[in-house]
Length: 161
Image 1: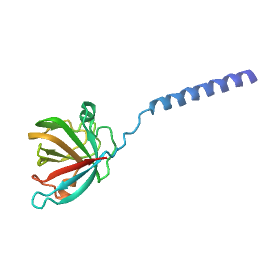
Image 2 (image 1 turned 90 degrees about the horizontal axis):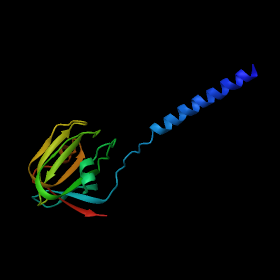
Image 3 (image 1 turned 180 degrees about the horizontal axis):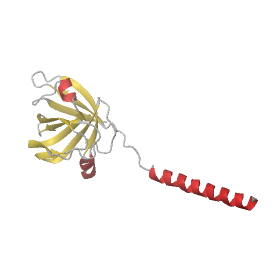
Image 4 (image 1 turned 90 degrees about the vertical axis):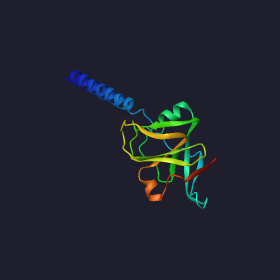
């Protein structure tokens, strides 16, 4: 009987050990956190005064611009992502693998806002075009462009950390 008990105990330990290793191998993904790389200033054209300051993370490389805010769970209201392209042209964004709503702000080479796509829906593959040529795109949490009073014609400036 002791031999049978020993075999059952060893098998049980082995089974749970394998199950625990399986659980550990599943949870290898790491959450992507916001990295402050600069500050962005939103300005009104009539007064040239700053009405909002944001911490920004830059998307400049091909990988960064293709990934953007995908696979992130959230972003604080004082944070944003600024996409910087090499050539001014019409752009189109979508919300594939983006877990929270965004306002997508299209900005021309003069750093003037030319279009705002408000409250883009999470995980939506629908194309959200700029319609006009742009060199920059700013992504902020959905609804903030309305609550902050961001309008076409407003401009941006930024500093790098």
